[in-house]
Length: 201
Image 1: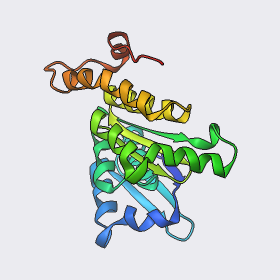
Image 2: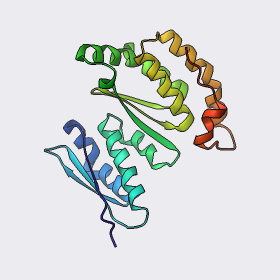
Image 3: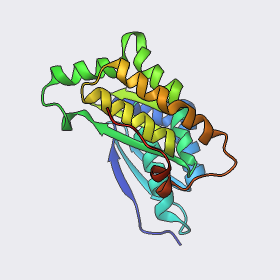
Image 4: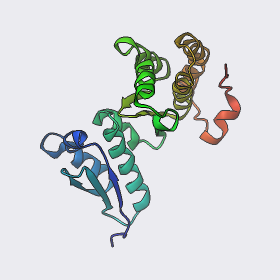
């Protein structure tokens, strides 16, 4: 029995070939690991995600949707595959919600990326999160606590804080990230914010 649940999304046409992959490899990997079927319209840039099995159908569709969306937002398939893990989170930040002109969006994108990608690499290296700046969006893939730190760092840049203050924020939380990374016990997401103070400036 196939559950009558499916979802549609649209991604940039330039990303369709990457979603499909060489000889359809990426598409097949997503379908196999999520028990879904991806119907891709290359001309329109639309993707329909249909569950193949009734068991856990909604969860499978949502997982496939996030992976497809992540690839659409500029992540490589290998980085998007991190979302197969239940402990990995994904979010897209729409810069148009904060800025109303193409010039201001371009400026903040430049600040997030930094010269030769230095700012983005700084956030990635100090949090272990993956950051993608694509179109008018900034997207993040990471485990929960590094995700919170990386998102905060991106938001500080969006809010106009200097790279120096953002680096200071990352330094303060780097040790906490490492402690969490090597901890034998996983802290459940709903309690993590009570244990770690993400300091404001």
